[in-house]
Image 1 (spheres, rainbow, N blue to C red):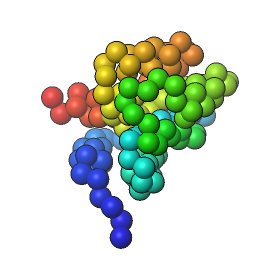
Image 2 (spheres, rainbow, N blue to C red; image 1 turned 90 degrees about the horizontal axis):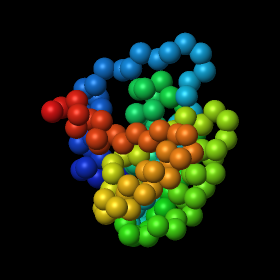
Image 3 (cartoon, rainbow, N blue to C red; image 1 turned 30 degrees about the vertical axis):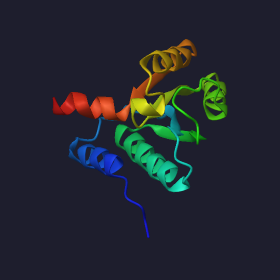
Length: 138
């Protein structure tokens, strides 16, 4: 039986109502996903990855690897998945990071800000689905 996560279902429903983006001609941008969850169940990680994949396709991006820190608390700064993400962002052709919600970075604004700054120092952008959908509905 497939588990349904209500917060992800709400984002998926909002994403469905958005028009698809006009995709520029040429090679699509490569975005990389990041998921941090304190839940140990792989079902949540898989549902988040599916949502990131769907969002990327609707924006005309190519989704590369989705990095995950499962079972990692919000206040932890040293994260194996995030470290791997930073490594690939330095590769040619890496455009940015897609995240389901800001809580995947951290519940703490200071830590979230530090992680966001770290991504931006690689020259990459960071896109947060929940924030972008909130801007559309306001």
